[in-house]
Image (tube, rainbow over all chains, first blue to last red; front, side, top):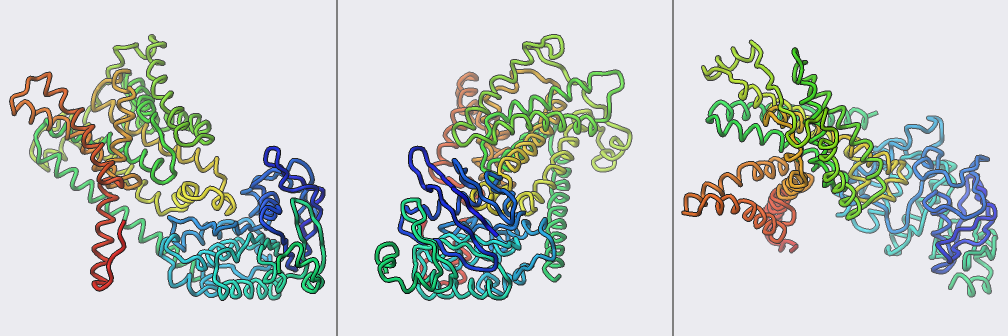
Length: 239
Length: 358
């Protein structure tokens, strides 16, 4: 589905990503793990076009999308859930969702999608339905994360990029969100590229894990292997 | 399916609401124009073009987060276009001329907007300030067309037959040309208001607000930031163009001295005093702009100041009002009112719990 070849991204003299090679297989959850500053967020930002890579290529379903404008990604079937709950604070919950739904307008109508209408979104996240005309800045952290995920799903993506969905959330909410991601993938064939610092939770739902350290890929393994490799867990994943 | 119908119903509700408000303003406008003297009529005509421009600016700044210190210059584009088009043996009807002014100003706004879309905050203010300073001097440079410092006198549109009989029926008075112009201003204001009321809740307005609040989230949702900013600038410029067209026929003159940086700053302060992003606020700000200076002047003369001193009082008071609003009510009149209203409602709903401060 998504192939990243020799990808390097720099912020001035700092190399955030250093010749990264990885693939994300369709219908699976690929988790990118690593410590702060490992380059996880830079990877997602480069894939979705928010940052331009200095070299390397990104292909989505065989099409080269390197350097394509961010706003075109949603029409290619890629939805990005940014770090720190990218809700639009002054807009209401419903208005936020409508922004997501507009992305779906140019997607083929037969694309498999778990969330097609606002009602689907409210069914999936009843909390959002209860607060549909509240301004997004009045939501709690967990509700915001749900709102952003719902907004991303309404664009009917085939590939969902999730950046630290667990950040700053209570363990119970984290479990709820991760459960939801697992179910969505199992039921609808959605592909997920998940970036997480919370390696334990991420590996509990991922099929494959990619460990980044200082911008380089150090390990690519099945989640099963990573879960059981104590040495690796200790040195890179901190659990 | 059901969301689609809900959306349609909401849209209809919104349209109906905007239509009713606009018609209400039209009615109040007619009543005001017919119940006040000639001098107040002229002031009300000024109010219409200030309000149109302030609404356009509040849409740009309030909904899209862009600042413009160049809207006075954009009004000049509209005013000169109107002056040139009316300066013939048999001029086109005013609505057509006003539409042309809107189109020409939008084109200028498009060019400026392309530059503006790349700039933020103080840089955008600086760039649009340059526009405000530079554009009036175009009139000085092309003396042949724009008649330099003196400017172009604007032929006042003649009131048509039906208008004369309408005024006769309403108040039994004779419809003068300045009365007709006041009605033209009112009509333009109502049209401008109707579009602005719909803008906020429409898809376009939603995108503008998304770009203002959270660029990254808006981009990720598939919104082209640059295109949205240019769009906001063009629509705002269209408002300035319409305001300029009305101003030309009200003042009957399009001269560089009327479109200095002072005008641009006044429009921005009008939007800020009223409350950024609020259309009612734009009205209040425009009213302050029109009615405060003469009121202060007459008050000063009344309390024994000389004419010169009295004339100097009004910009002074205007400045003080602006400083006070910024200090005491940074949300402007409407922002402060809506916060107060929300707090009062909160207290009514939960009398036991203390309301949050700030």
